[in-house]
Image 1 (cartoon, one colour):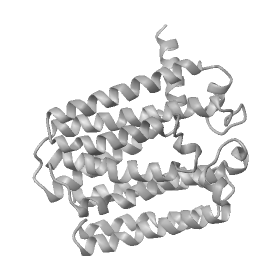
Image 2: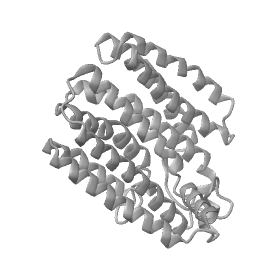
Image 3: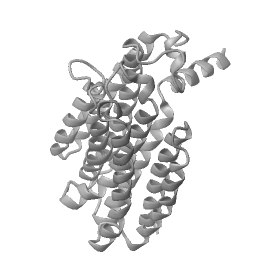
Length: 290
């Protein structure tokens, strides 16, 4: 009985891509370390509520997106990853949609509770984040199906997560805080862009992603260009005091970019950008701790 329950939980977690919750969690931790380094922390309760809201919204986007991809026929039995479980009916589609809706509601409730602990200005990033989470794959916008997926990811996993976390902790926000979020937004966007590049030929005619709309040559150029920009921002950030001098250790993740060139047209191509993303976050976090 217990074994069957565990198997079911693991199965649904795989379909909902629960493992990617590790990334927003890392971003939240980096936002906390940054705030603790630069400011006096005013409220931890508000920060906890905001963090929970971020994780639930992320889970909601993942599950509803998987459901819509399946419903629109973008995914089939041969799709990469665990999608076959949803397409084949091993996991009922309605259950996945229910998880997505429940996660969105819980995310919204957590965000509202955060307002109780102040500041009330949290409502701005909260509403923007909720709108993007709701319409990322849902009608009438369906942003990810109109080549806006990368832009949405950059805004949410860069500006919105950091502004809401820093604001909840310190009740302050300034331009430097927004600048600090840019590399994180870029590295998360890179994972989505690399994923869409990998699936470009498979999804052509079924949806419109950035690589499908602008072509693979443009997409590869954009991917490598913005990655270079993200790393080049580090010495600038050190110079203007956004991150400590030890933040230079984050450049240790830079050589991984060149290894990705050898993996073009390979499923491992996407994985390398995920590794760059995680490595960068961990190294930046270490620089604040030390």
